[in-house]
Length: 277
Image 1 (cartoon, rainbow, N blue to C red):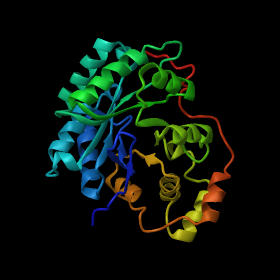
Image 2: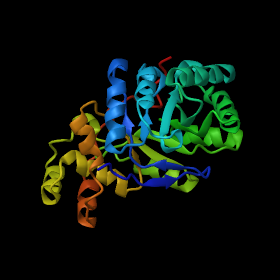
Image 3: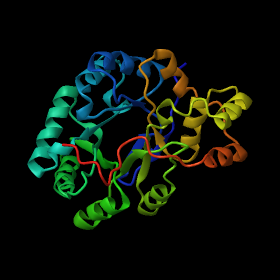
Image 4: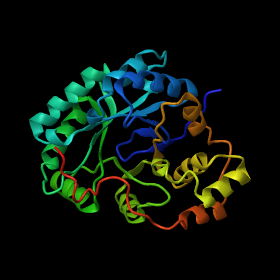
């Protein structure tokens, strides 16, 4: 039976599923099958990006579903080389064409681009996209608190979401506090630590107590912290496993133990340094 995924309220009055399928590094030719498997398992949210090169595959997978468009939640992202006002509008139209959609539910600026604040021009374009219906919600990805302040102060519009690297060994507590203070939802990418934590003894022991895998324990940890989580997989069995997390609850002691996992270095690029075009 398909799982029922809870939703969280965003600051613009919309709601977002708390668990979705991420398709980073999924080849275009595999994306359709992965999306189909996810929708069959009960996922309703799919997270892609222009730079992933698989928007067409994602769109093909969506078209195989009999689900109504209103029951799907599709996110894509604006790449760094399109931060100009006009370029952002163009990039959005290209993504919609590849996806085969009239609108996306969430459009994110993928990176702030270190040393530049052209993301403000892109953000002004995205505000218009929200107003004209091409994006139901708009947000950012990999933004620091300084980047977020620059956006908010420059435009008066607060992002609905900031998608950042976040997992038990890189918990981003300061960013989560900042987001909470400003009504921004926190979305976790690489929520399983890119597989590097699947043999962690704390997670293994907690999983053993609940009859769950370390991956399921980590996903549950994200959910109970109120985070949006988008684990990636192209394997149907793993896709089903990752959504099978609503039949158990981590105890306060479990959460404390996971919160106590020592902080490690980030796995992805540093937003304060990353400037790839």
